[in-house]
Amino acid sequence: MAQVTRITVEAATNVPVAKVWKAWNTPSDIMQWNSADPSWHSPSSENDLTVGGKFKHRMEAKDGSFGFDFEGVYDKVDLHKEITYTMGDGRKATTLFTEEDGKTNIATTFDAETENDPEFQKQGWQAILNNFVKYIESTN
Image 1 (spheres, rainbow, N blue to C red):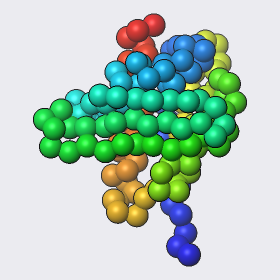
Image 2: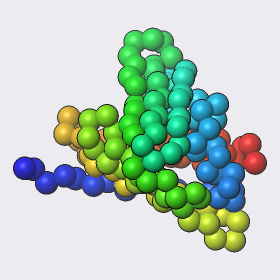
Image 3: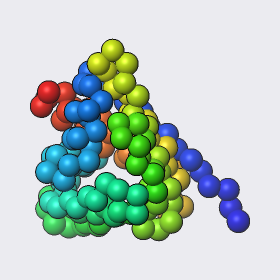
Image 4: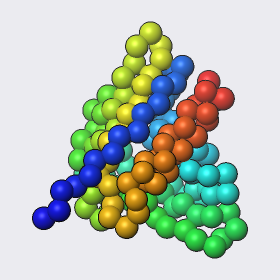
């Protein structure tokens, strides 16, 4: 079996972890920030943030030319600290939330898929994370 490439993206925000956690996991918030590029959006989001619970976020190009569902099942949910899930294709991802002095660091490590270059995947996930930081800091 081929070695799985693990990729980590990280960002810091000037927002306390409780607010970060809420915006990270609330469908109405997710629909506001979950895109890697301004030409994309998330028109729908479902999230059952419990172990064994499922999530599904629709991601589409605003012009309607392409779209997909990003979905998975939660393996671990540790309030304000960690979320681990298995994506629909079997890959794993873990997001860690670390608060210090009212600021929160967010780090996501995920298994790369094999169709796209790992650096391209890292850029996409980092762009979504950066979009989240911009969103949460603008609403705080």
